[in-house]
Length: 556
Ligand code: ADP
Image 1 (cartoon, helix red, strand yellow):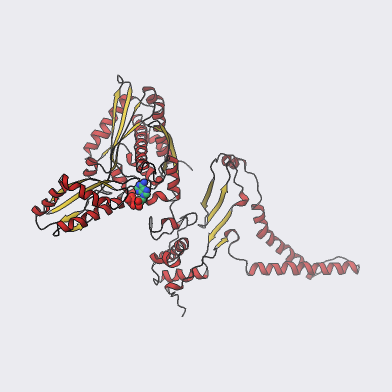
Image 2 (cartoon, helix red, strand yellow):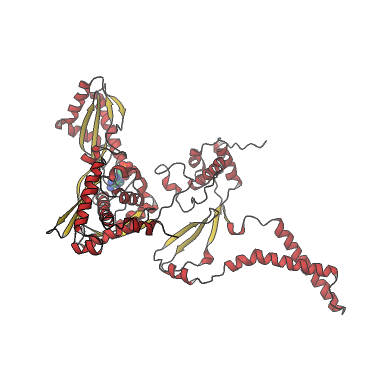
């Protein structure tokens, strides 16, 4: 019996190019050989007999065998025409006026990937600016397993090789993803057709962003803006599959721009982590609480905390007790990083330090949920987490009418009854807005933020008030917990990094560490302001359902 077992260190390290041309199927086998043989033997037979007849002046009537030879000739000719001829015709660069026009509008140098029905990646590479894409250069590629791959796939399928170990064993992240994907399809009996594998740098996510990859999900990125914020223009990238969202935010940006722009203020900047520790008695737990709250101790604790990073700087420690358990909410600045790793390292340093003065302190967990990360919690709504930002604009009366197609009084009334009273009736926690989360999520996905932090990052109260004698609209969003970074996590991936670059906040700010992340938080708030304006106007004007039918239910 053939064994599929492969010793760990025996995996072939090579990654021979496994790209084949799918358009010609995989085979050139028996049929083609038979027809080839037929074709040439029939031709040579007919040639020889007819030459002989001409030489000997024999009449050119067809004998039975010659008629059979002609039939075979025609049949094999038709076969070859079908086999080679179609490919040849398809490769001819026939102009298609409509599509060419569209392509000429493409003004970005880009690599376009799409997936064909076989799940193979169609690659049209490096098109020049304004150059139509020639169809003849479209190469249909798909990956097939080499015999070496087959061995590894079988080892994963049979459980001899853990799927998670493929990257380290093969030393090639893309090949690992390919093999894992093949094994997964065989184990589950389900196809992953449509989930692309090609066109992604799997090395860039190793040990940082995603384990056991089998491909990547594509999310379209739309651009809202420009958004005029604090005198600067920002084109805001939004990754979403919700029709209307980008168009609506774009309309809000237009209204803000036409009214002179929006202004943002950063109120606070500090990431939090709150470990939980337990003592034998509440009295003893309170002793640590008083120790931490003593201003004289803060400097020592801060210097212990700050050793963890060049950028993490301890700001406060806020305590809460539940019986003999103590929760310590550490807040620190984190430069351009969102900061969860940074603050956790600093907290661990302090816990280690405290253990010598409080040996009876039982550390239950580095995170005791009083932080509070990725869960709706009043502590974030009240105290803030990450960046706390307020953003405002005065929208002129005529802009409300012309761009937003409503009036100031209707907007103010709707805001009061929906975003304030309605949310109060619903018992909302930080949800005093129309759809802040829509914009936050889309910008987070586009710029490589942690999408799960959308929970608290979307806390927002939207306020609207008639000003300038009731003519104009003062609108503001106050968002206490915008958790963003421009270094670390998903921000370093190629697509996300390109979106950060578009906003001018890519990577670490060398001159003033932290200002890129703070700027990004302001852009998030400004975009939410635009989104709130537009959606609220659509609802006030009774257009919401109509526009969603138009953009979400396209016949296409
Ligand atoms: P997070 O704390 O958000 O999870 P990471 O720890 O993954 O982020 O990334 C932060 C890393 O980036 C740290 O190693 C830090 O030293 C480095 N770094 C470089 N420049 C900066 C900067 N300007 N601000 C913050 N971190 C920076």
